[in-house]
Length: 268
Image 1 (tube, rainbow, N blue to C red):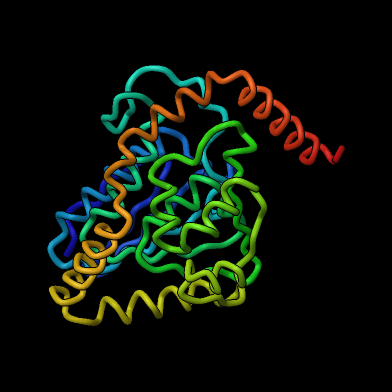
Image 2 (cartoon, rainbow, N blue to C red):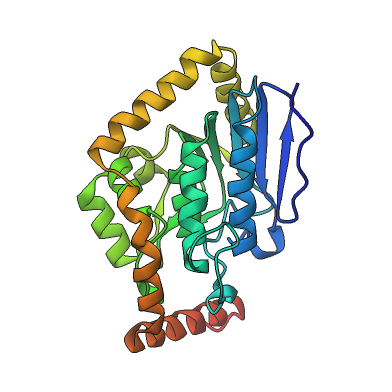
């Protein structure tokens, strides 16, 4: 059995020994990725590594979305990252690295919106199932900032360089069928079937011999790391911090947030 499951404020972790669930639990904010939430995800990933029989972790979002991405209300956070990084902008990279490094196989259950940093989080998982109504987008450039947190190498690894450039530079939304065709998703299911499909895949993996399954994950990750390594992303936070000071970027960000507020108020 698992050791005592830790309590968190912005995520929920459940574990029955062989299988666990990590739920992003800020449904009122569409599971926006605050620095606290990302630090807690990194802590949970470290805890998973100490569970002797754990094979699979399902990563999901509570409420109407998987994740609306980086919490825009914390753009001005100062001081060190709560996950131990040099600056708050480094927390997302530490979260994604911790997920990718943890031993169990991670299965992402994607629904609603999967935006920006939420897509990076999903890319750090090993397997991904989405509803046919899911909506993906990478709005960072419209916000005047580069896609950080190791998002570029992870997307190049999953969908290739040309499509990565297009989706990141144009910020255009894309749906489940395009994500499946690009190789980002393992399968698509109707929304009503998401839980059963994820549960079925998780059990298929968990029922196999643990040592062989986890060795397969490590082997594949070692191969892809030689192809498109994420190690160079340690400096992503510097590019993000510089972009936050760029006048053109600040103007673009203000315009984006104004459009977002207008849509929420029914003005656009």
